Length: 261
Image (cartoon, rainbow, N blue to C red; front, side, top):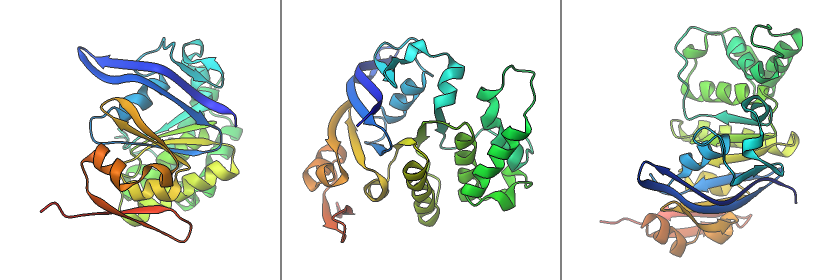
């Protein structure tokens, strides 16, 4: 199976605080990968290192068999896109205009406007995600679940090969969270995309991820399929959580937390 991301002995610190400690992992093509672990363990920092936000000259990360530091930011933006936990959008921008911003890496220069092709790609992405009816709405007027899908649409409009999602469901109710991750799973299956998602909800991770990396104190403590790593023993080690594991008809594990009190 082709590797799209390879990380070898990656460490990162904020000042004198070590966040990532010799992280080594491989991410395979056309998979939904979950990055899990308790608050502060380094999950989002790992994602930001992959993007090059924190270290632009990283020797420890390869993307499609090429060192991350050898890509320009524009080249990287053509193959990787981020779906953030939330957006800093504050202006009254329409959904179609906001989503079309995903075409920025494909413009020849900064003063060139969007082409008909760019708008066509943006609108087609809205259709894929069932958002075309909102195309002329002000993006900020949408509900949380709808706007999170708009963020996903903007990322997909970049036409990336790798989709990075930083806690994309943390502000969503259960219905919208399942809907969003279901759409990501379908996109991976049908559009030759690899998705890497930082998640907190273990049951969502079990439902939709092909492989999980569990981070503990800045290190990859466990990796494998949901069935392999979502066990009572491992969850107690990672989260200090006592739980009971049940399995559905497809042998996927689901976690029932046990009361502490």
